[in-house]
Length: 66
Image 1 (cartoon, rainbow, N blue to C red):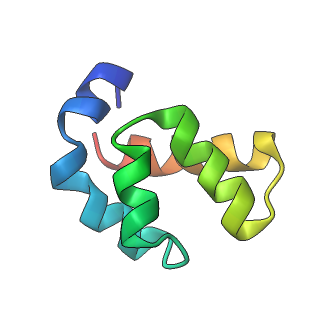
Image 2 (image 1 turned 180 degrees about the vertical axis):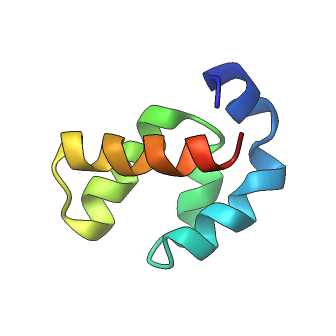
């Protein structure tokens, strides 16, 4: 999913993000606010992923939303 499209659809997809990554809190999702880098950072923080692993996980998830 294109970054601008992701940001624009954030309110629609954040519920899906919460299902995908249950450790993300509602506050996390509000802070992320459709920013890919913030989501990747929260995945690193909550799940202990490396940056590369978190980016791969995000990319796989975003591709499934297209």
